[in-house]
Image (tube, rainbow, N blue to C red; front, side, top):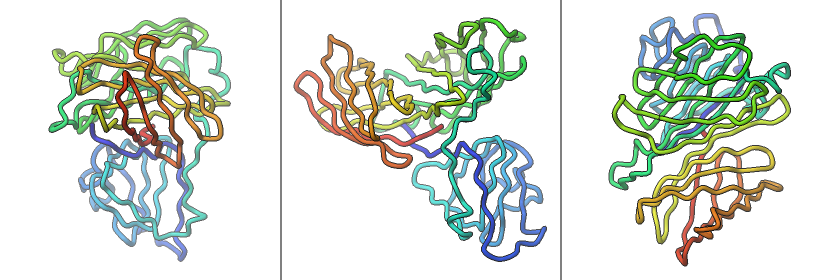
Amino acid sequence: MYLKTLINAIIIAFCIFPVSAQDTITTAKHGLWSDSTAWLPKIVPGANAVAKINHNIVMDINTNTIGVIVNNNQLLINSGVAMKITGSPSDTLLKNIPEAPVEYDNKSFGIYKGVIVRQTYNAANNIDSSGSFKLVIMNGNASMFLKFGNLIDTLNPNVSLGAGSINSWFIGKHFSMNFRVEADGSLPKLSDIFLNNTTRIDTGLVMKERSYEVINTHEGLISGDDYGPTVAIISNQKISGIVCSGLFGGIVNFNGSISNNEIDASGSAESGAVFKGVIKGIGAYGTWSNFGLFGHWSSRRTF
């Protein structure tokens, strides 16, 4: 699994000294930070620039900029990549507030966030084991932005979406999946998740964000007596997740509560799995036990 960090909010960054117009570099298309053709002018933002993000961008190189402004899009930072902001810290803030409009709280339209994971796990080649997505459905227009390992995809529905219940295929260049939700926004569900029309992604989770509750997705790993990817959806007071066992080849679903950033979760009755930990910033970590096996887990926020 390829861990990453997502800046999924408005970041307002100003320099500590005046910035001239030519120092503002704006995205021209979705793509990689290192790709000069993704920017206008065709220059990768550097130490004297403010980067304005109007598209979905993946930061794949170490970056030193005066500031970053993200406008209703996503900036993903790959694991091991450092972003340094030289502007005033008070002017560079990650907003942890809901994006969902209040008028869609009890409707099928709105914002959904989710995770997908493969049951087959190879520790030597783990970059394609899990992924995260954000689905935005507004006024009949819908688009899903998904990152799975090194793959970035935008999925669109195969039918026009009305204001009632939704049951639609979402199809992109690499991925396809079925998404269903009731007219009031309840019971969102994923099924038939495929990579390149042939490889079946085993399972996934999705949750609707509402105007009063932030939904975050996490991807991570377990270690110790077992190994493999873990994914989770975290809200203010609850967590739902999946662990894929590299040792046994199965999966464990877990659910639990969060209080004062402390996680207390358990798996299905058959497994007896227990997960405990803490949330710290954009990361989370803790311990797990299952069938007499023990270890640690860690994850990072992706959406």
